[in-house]
Image (cartoon, rainbow, N blue to C red; front, side, top):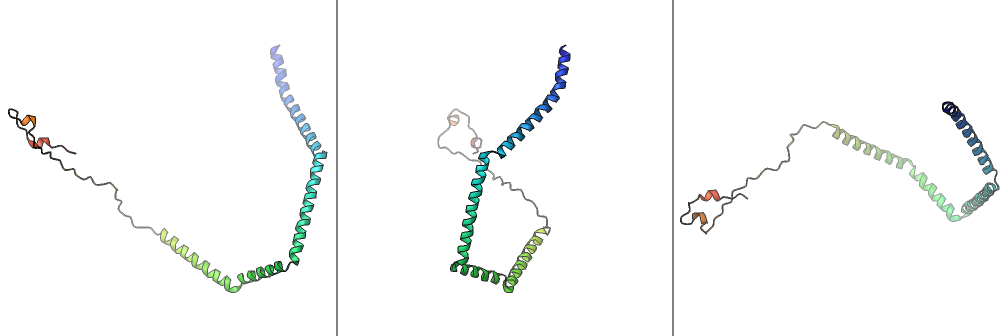
Length: 162
């Protein structure tokens, strides 16, 4: 009996998932529709429209004032003259010459760097070892081994390297 109820449940699960997904879609659709039709959304939309209308009126007013202002007219004429001068044949010719010169220098440098260089011998940067000279210790004292009755030792045996 438990096997039969498990089969029924496993067959029901996919249909339950589909039904719940369908229900979720319907609920989201209703929520979206209710939001679009809400008085709050309509009020916000009216506020935004009024604000944009005010902004548009102020911008248009500023443009009209600027059109009639003598200093703005002079600035406009000055900008127009500068534009025409900048696009004159002499300036364009100078710009072309400068561009050609810059491109030539760039190409020459690239060609120089692209040329194969002769192979050079690679020398390792290993510092040369300097030989350490032995240090001879000379003492005016008679060591105990050289004292009377003790054998004499060779002073070279007493050399201590640093």
